Structure formats: C-alpha cells, structure tokens
Image (cartoon, rainbow, N blue to C red; front, side, top):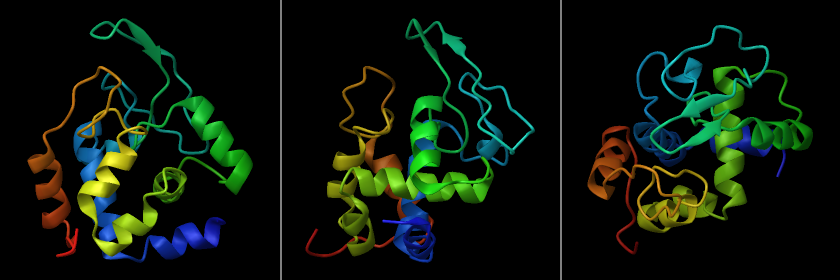
Length: 159
C-alpha cells in the first residue's frame, strides 16, 4: 500500500464515515479535532506531530497522542517513514488513519460495509472502540454505529 492507495480509499464513503466513527471515541469530532492533544489542549502548527508528552492521571500514564485519531508519536514516526507524510495536516492525519486501518487488515471490511468486523479489528489500534482491551473508556457500539451511519456509511446485509 502506498499514499495513492490511501488517498483512493478516502474517496470511499464507508471509509470517511468510519473515520468519523473513530473520532467519536477519541473525542475529536469537534472543529478542533485535528488540533487536539490528548487531555484536551490544542496545537496550531500542522508542520509536524506536536509530540507533547502529557500525563493522564485517570489512567496513570503519559501519552503523546494527538490529532483527530489521537496517533502517538512513535506510531506517527513509523507512518512518516513508511508513507513520507509531509506534515501533520488534516489530510495527512486522514491518510495515516487509513494506513492504520489497513494495518489491522480491516480496510476491505470497511469498504465492504462489514462494520462490526472492522470495529473489532481496529479496537486493537483505537482504545476507545468497542472490544478494546487497553483499559480505557470504550464507546458503546451503538454510538459508534450511529455516527458511522449518520456520516453516510452503509452496513452490508451479509455483515
């Protein structure tokens, strides 16, 4: 998979709807979502991942999660190495999220409308998705499904 493949996937309505559904649990559905740093602060420089280490008392951990998909800095660095993202812009963040979905072998499930299968596979990537085992707050499946459907996603009858 290359950047062109990621960009092509973003032309699919199920993919863009699934990205919105991920953002629900990550707390980034609002206008500042692409600028959100874990814990609620925002950044303004899209030229690079902010890489701000934030202590999260609720979970007694530090995190560098940022952007619409709350991608941690080490993951972002690996994605930049693999796909040569030029910045941390909303476009690059969307492409990176598609790469992470593909990395969980869920992209075809998303495209085909196999929503529950895609959520289950991606719950290992996003701790807020139903089925995640990271010990963080998990969004209810019905809420995730609702955002997906309202955002134009379709669910296959065979799914």
